[in-house]
Image (tube, rainbow, N blue to C red; front, side, top):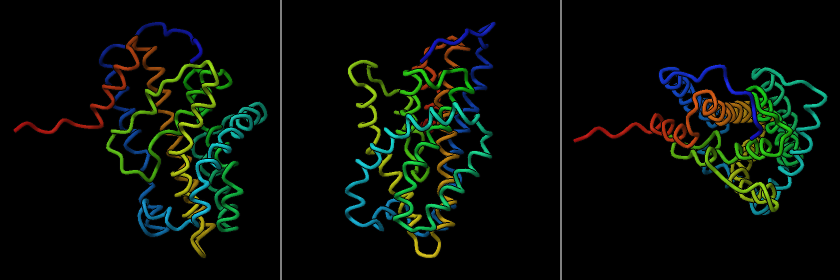
Length: 258
């Protein structure tokens, strides 16, 4: 991450606890619309991928990896031209993109995939900037890509999947390509669910709009959690790894003794 100015004073322990509570709530609420989307398209998340043709399923990983590579340049270029938007505006714009892709069924959704990936990355970059980090710095781009390794909006997650907060690779020796290759399989599954929902007959455009709305909201919140913790580590002068453990404890309440 790039260096940012230290706060005038460190947060008090009580203020730090309050910030952690807010981040935990944001994490829990990230998938709130996911179940509604599933009710719209029918079925369960694990069954959506079965609706895709085998060649599409087999190529999801490579297609997603390529989309991520294209997204990095496209997202940065767009930020230089169009200012960051409010979360609600981002979700509406994303929904419009999904509707356009869904109107063409699966072929249209496949064409839309790189554009949506770039737009989601652009949203994540905006969150990084909101927290005081430079989205064009290599280390911050690295962190933005890491957000895509979160579980996904349709996953039933109790907070166990916080690996995207602690994933580490050296920034040397082609680390960005290694990271993309590591993230792509998981993101490919998530994007496969999106493609399958948009391929539903008749409901393609509606499902596409709803899916993108849900996905943009999800990754926006995951980025808020990720960069919020990064900023909190600076403001509270607490090691990041300790904050991750405290967040995980909030998301996975201890089983009552006895």
